[in-house]
Amino acid sequence: MGKYAKGRRIEYKVKNILSKAGWYVWRLAASKPFDLIAIKNGEILIIECKKGSSLTKMEKIKLLEIAKNGGATLILAKYENNSVHFYKILSENRMEEVKVDYFKENDI
Image (cartoon, rainbow, N blue to C red; front, side, top):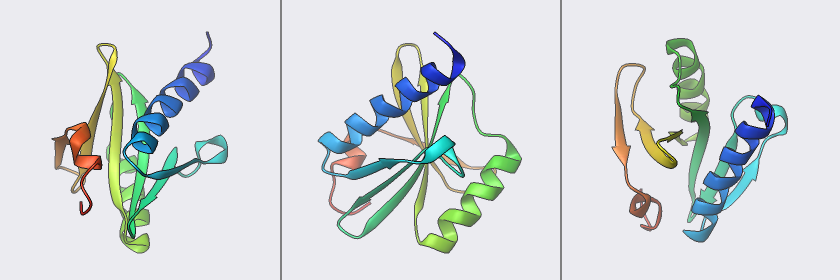
């Protein structure tokens, strides 16, 4: 399986997890400028999916700016050890892991 197909598969895993938690989720064409956008109860998530790697400093800066301008929360969905781990990106130097239950709550 090629790199594109693996990445798409992870995006669909994340999309399904969030959809089951009540979010409306869309994949963006060519994953530009990010992979997924999700909306629930007036909240917006911008999601970047990675397999085994993390966001570079420049990616964080760019995506945090987009999130700020759109009133969204930036989430890194990282696939490692055969499961998806979610991280809320707080700044270019800070992130905190969040569990799947985080997405089931009404207010984030």
